[in-house]
Image (cartoon, rainbow, N blue to C red; front, side, top):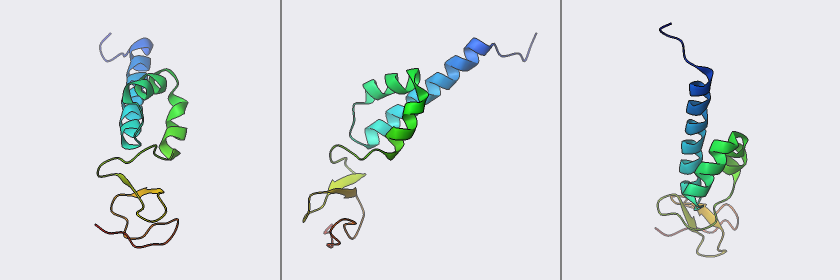
Length: 89
């Protein structure tokens, strides 16, 4: 029967997509990519807390530390949202 997708294959594709998305989000937040790929593939609801999680460390082009208070802020933010100090380039 052409055009019919087996449910097991569809489930595999959904879990694969969740794992890949989790890996990309983990990389942007300075977390272990392989671990989060596996966790998000096995438990897709983990994508939501990972999306809102704060980064663990500086990530080139994504997050940097504030020069005054040391909190992690977006890379191109002109002002720290925590201490309101101006950032240098």
